Length: 95
Image (cartoon, rainbow, N blue to C red; front, side, top):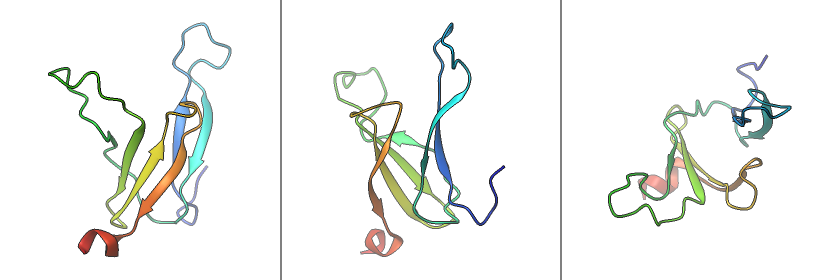
């Protein structure tokens, strides 16, 4: 069980029916800071099928409303093991 003193993490769940690890967490990508409260993830490209289905979705944008940080996670190298590509601090957003 995670405590409030530990950083949030993005969990990857195996959703392949019949897999040995089906419905289990297969990877956790821990955030570098405590207190982000990750919420409302999205892709760097629209997910609508209206004219942009060809765009790659290599980066997951993961905001932390409580901290005002925005985490960019790269999922193209290994979708089962996302890596933090960048953390945008609140001060950078305000600029």
